[in-house]
Length: 275
View 1 (cartoon, rainbow, N blue to C red):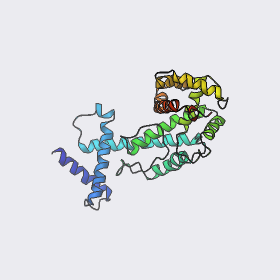
View 2: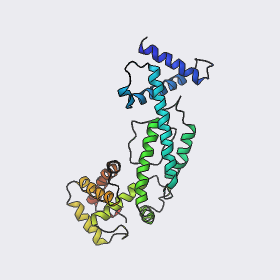
View 3: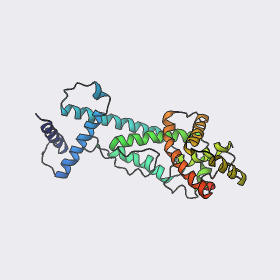
View 4: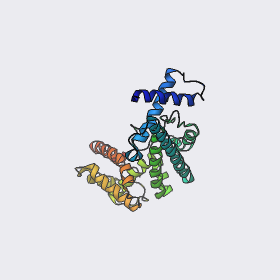
């Protein structure tokens, strides 16, 4: 039997399950969706550690079923992560954060179809994390998204709540309505305080302090490397000096360095560091 024939037979079997055994005749669109789901499960298996030690003569159906089992397993793990997050979730009133992680995820786990539509993640994920999900979909995307939310919550739980509220209020009086990444706003201001070696609880900057931070940043050839040093100092003080956490915030540090270069050129560094 050729590989193509195996795919056709597998699609027929999945179609019977899809129609509860009544028929193998479905619309072209439905057949495409089912085949996409089959390929998703097979890819889940191929990208797992199991495939490296499995027997090389596994049938396509066996590979698919094992991949489906992995999808179900990852879905259960993701649900546990989401349930754990709910025990002490800090959104600081941000509507996109709450709607996505609390309400949205509950709907996802209620309606996610691991058997027939594993490639659909159902949610628009309006709250922007600092992660890159361009190559992910289905439960792979949701799982990665939630693990990034875990990192965010670990970070936010280390910061005094009154400081986070103060930073967000300084950023915008409408911060609860904005679609922004909460930890990014906080880490930017912590980096500013670290550069000046001032306590974060010492709110605000004087004109002299802004001039000092301007001069300190202006003389640095690599703003990114300088800011990464500050980030590592902050994470060390918070007892979060972990590769996963550092890598997560690298995207924000890179973006911050770009914004600082523009701010230095036009001399409005006060728009970067508010508190």
